[in-house]
Length: 267
Image (cartoon, rainbow, N blue to C red; front, side, top):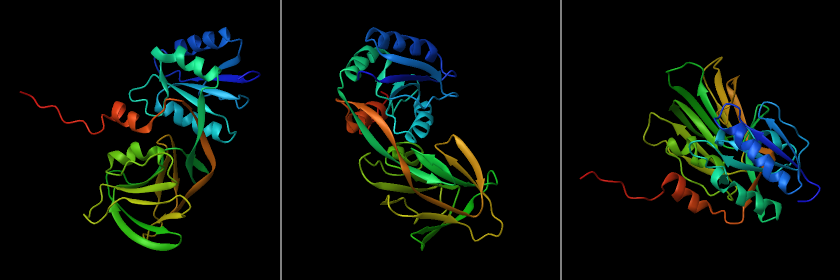
């Protein structure tokens, strides 16, 4: 990692983020590394490797920005779940040592694109009228698939399958699969089920209602209103997640989502 410029991006809205950023800077300085600390409202594209200090939302924002530059990002969790992060504050010293010695891999994660926005987790489509269900017509590769009467539709990447899509009843998809998941939100029919499709497919959601508007969100952070035809496809960018050599997706499922644990019973 010699001759590399490191970035430390922190979320000023999260307690201790600035403090942990300073701690991280001191550790990088002990290796003689060049670094700069910025907050997530002032990203700098001129880094070779970026540490992101915050929660999953902070990492998602950083991933969308640095994907355009092919820059690896590494998450330090200060949030509630930290599903996308690779280390905690307690293990920060060991993580920095591994990164400086090159004991990590960079994994490409597929992203979504719609209306000029990109997303690492998901694109969510909802009606513009709060509290009302909407009718969504789904097409894949210009072929009609089905109509949904629902609160919305989630189109998620494998990375995002453990986020909103999982809460809405979608499947967990391992990050390496080249797929997208389409999940209706609270559909008004028992025959509406999530779909898993190849990430090469062109997904279109449209409405038969005249002048219908939809509200679109990318990773739950970027919101915009769109006309009655929304096209979603694989982005030309990939998020570059730096993973330590002991990373294991199934261990994260057990540790962070308590996957497969028997429910506790009160005596």
